Image 1 (cartoon, rainbow, N blue to C red):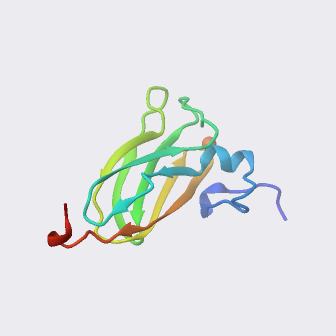
Image 2 (spheres, rainbow, N blue to C red):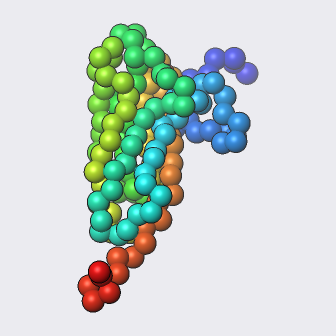
Length: 130
Ligand SMILES: [Fe+2]
């Protein structure tokens, strides 16, 4: 068995989410939303790469982050080395709950997935709104 590991042959995920390796901490996307979400009501989604800052150098950087809810593609965020940190805030409007998935790609260390379960409360019927 070879010692060489090819990061590009799969989507890399945390082996143990409770105890991330340094490589996982630098590459797995981090997703944040407000605590309370309502179906059909826009909210701000913060996306970034790494609990530890990933390099933003010409020869080592995050090329993009793809976002999905379940199997539904949302967008691709593309980053230029040196001048752009791999982070963004998006306004999102969803009608139903689902698994939010972010897949980032480092030019040296391949694709990494981070997820967040989104639980959206049903919007109250119009006659119950204040
Ligand atoms: Fe990297």
